[in-house]
Image (cartoon, rainbow, N blue to C red; front, side, top):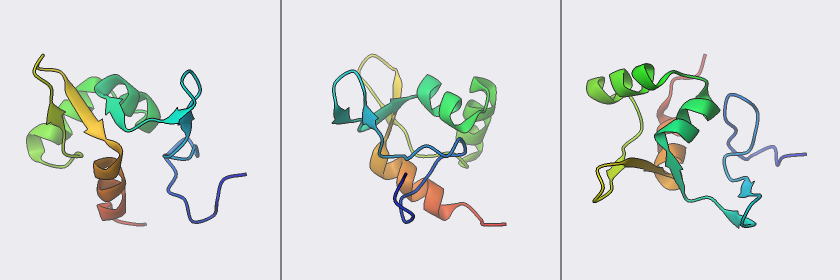
Length: 82
């Protein structure tokens, strides 16, 4: 059972869940991982990014985007609660 104070994603999984392949905490998410976790399309993610509504991303030298766990947590806390 997840800790009651831990942040959870829309699918109710802990946002600090260990990566089962390496047994370490995942620090960086790909765009695909973010979209899967938040159940949004890639186009929605990039629209949020264009409007400045999504989490801050880091651009790798290859041009790929990554979202750091700390930034994801900051972004989640900034979302309005209904």
